[in-house]
Length: 227
Image 1 (cartoon, rainbow, N blue to C red):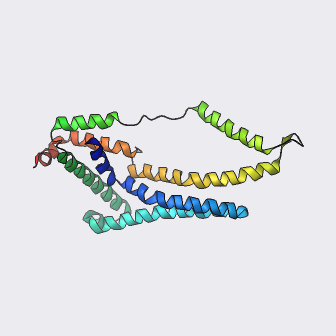
Image 2 (cartoon, rainbow, N blue to C red):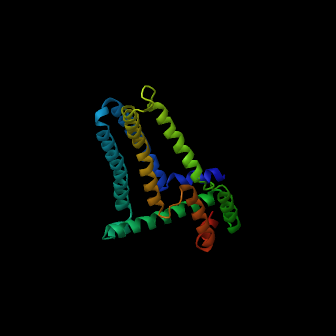
Image 3 (tube, one colour):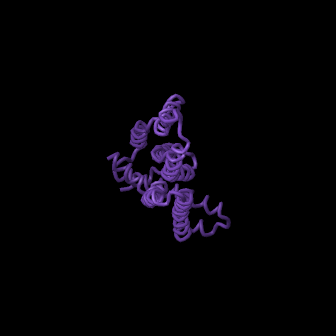
């Protein structure tokens, strides 16, 4: 039951819509860019620049489609004059619609009382992932291993030191490929943080909305009681 609620809730989240739209396109761009990087070695930074532009364009297209849909279906968005007021109206309606949909789904699963909502809230709150971050020593250890690998590869026994020619031959393509792979992840992370506005993960949004329904239970009590 709870898994069904979570699955249905996440289907229509803007962050989920963005991930569904963005990642298939981003992965296709990554694959093509890496192939071109291997072929056009002297122009790898041009390849990276074009890939970066395509990542940004794909994200912009998503938001243009979102804006077009909102302008067609939401009267308050159409009536707003400036872009900032249009976005405020859009987020407000999107939040309201998301919570109403959640209330309907709770009712569908026969979770109608305030104690039912509290039970559901406690369940999803207990499942929130622990915010674990690598400490400084882990970052240093990882960096040392990476640098050691480069030193081993670029060490020249004939001169008993690191060969600068080998260093650039190994380091430059490695950096280019790493940037091609990491850039869409960083861009997606920034966009999802902007969508959430509170910089929370998608997982916490359900808990926040359940908490809102629980605190404002009187507002939704009649709808939950409907047969």
